[in-house]
Structures are given as C-alpha cells and as structure tokens.
Length: 103
Image (cartoon, rainbow, N blue to C red; front, side):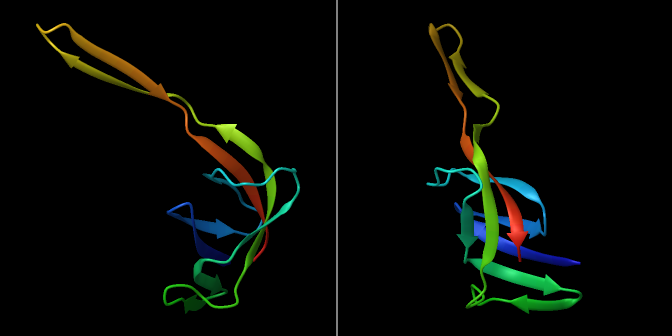
C-alpha cells in the first residue's frame, strides 16, 4: 500500500492514491485544476519507507482541486452570572476539497 504524509496549511495529512480530503483554503479558482504539494514528510511504497529531513527533496504529490466549502458552525459562549455578561459568537472555517491523483 502506497501512502504519504504531507504538510499544508500548518497541518499534516496521511494520504493515499484516490483519497479525497479537506485542507485549509487554497488560492485556486477552477475545478479540476492541478494542485502540487511539495512538502512531503514521509513516503511509503510497499514497505519501503522514506523519511525526509524535514522534507523529501524532489518529491511532489499531485492532486485535483474539487472546490471550496465551509465546515459546520462552531459556537462559543462566554457567560458570567450576576453581572449581565453574555457573549455568543459563531465561526465557520473555510476549506478546499482535493483528490489525490498521483503519488
């Protein structure tokens, strides 16, 4: 089984061929456009593991961009009793959906 660990948007993702996953919003406009991830931390190919220091030089993961979206709303509430203090805030994080084309 071939898989890789990449870094993008300050997070690390374990990906496989054909997998669809969400990353932090990318500056890509057209659906189907190629997205290249060059920060590859680990690459495993049928038991042969290559570990980068910190990245593997010359290795690029090719993905297809499938669009942007927004996660479910996260609500935070701050409340202090007896002092008439109440704050309610909501946030929806944006993401980009990509599918791995080639490892």
